[in-house]
Image (tube, rainbow, N blue to C red; front, side, top):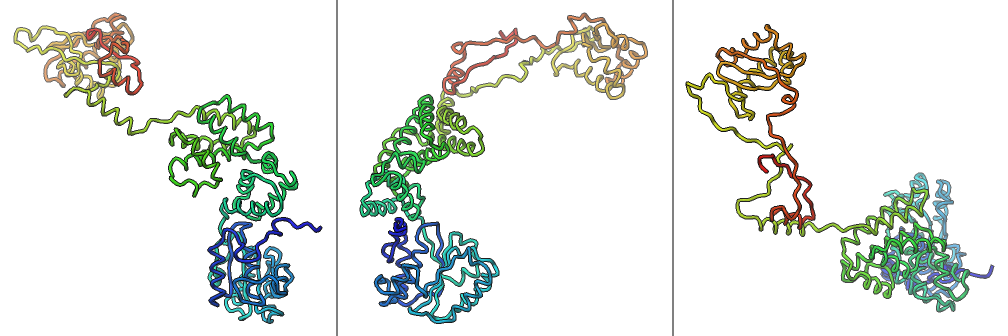
Length: 548
């Protein structure tokens, strides 16, 4: 076939033509000029960024008829043969196919011979990380002290797989991903020279799809021309690349920011009809939200966002009035949906529900705003007052009135006090504690008892009719309780048992509570301010009957 693809036709032939690697080409040119050229180089970096191309240019510069020179002529026999790949002094080896120790032994024998025509014998080993450990070890001595006419150039996309002993014997040059704008400029130059009509937006779509690889971008341009002809349309590029135009991302993001979930579902349906991959679309949307955030927080987004100037301007217009917190929540939500799509068998449902959830995200109030409102509420409180919390369980306690003990009333029965501070309850409590220790079964019979009255000479207990009351009323049990009470209290005690009605047994010494729910406007001013600031409501408030 006579046709030559663009990637080969437009392959750089001199250092100046290499795009995006000026830090490397300048170093190599200076090394040739000053005659400080190393005997081994390691070129590492992503695919399609110029590693093998730079190696060929370096070999051409060393064996040029006018060289060694940083600017090979490209017209002498050595340059022509090196460009065509037929030079006997420039040996290109595929590391994946020649990875064994036997191949390295052959190389060690071949390096002893002088170059046939040029000044140097250059060995270019591509994908050198594919060599075995034994092959690397066999190469060490030759690599460290090669003959003066031999130069090694290793190229790899995975430098971490190369032993440190090889690294230390080479000068390493790290090739970078080519910036988007430089790929677009090179593609525009190629399109103009080849007579290809394509928009700047189309060039940007190809450059983004290439992911920093010049070779990939040229191959994609070749593919687009094969599909569309010499006039490449943006719609055709979307079909080829499976990508989404920047206008569609802007439109979809606008619906997302305005929470138009219904309209977004219609857009998703339209994109699916066009055969668009939902994972690729959602990945583009996540990147779009990221670009909006970059625009919000940086003063020079063009240095970070790899998009044409016109697209960056559209992003800046869309970012106006959008809160950064909202963008962060959208990014987290869409990223989670993108991760879920990897394992979901129903990708359409997953992306649709993910978009609906993103539309219903509610930004949280900043903590500083909440603190300011709390301080405003505190400042409105009068000195010495505070918001009291309800008593757990709704039980309010009241201390009984103190009744002084007199000689005339010492033997008169008096009502037992319900509060824990009452003396009668304390005395009976001591008797019950001793009874639980010594006769726990008998104490259990008094579980439903009620202390009715008390005096200095005894206690009156009420018990409902039951098996327990029958047991307590037995003479031996009552005698034992009176004896134990006398030992505990230090005086003679008589215990009287009286029947207790069922309605009395169910009642408690604690006053009944009634639940009262007040309307918001009936609350105190402080509570009303709290409800207004924090958006709350009063569920219920408990009060005793006597408290009203």
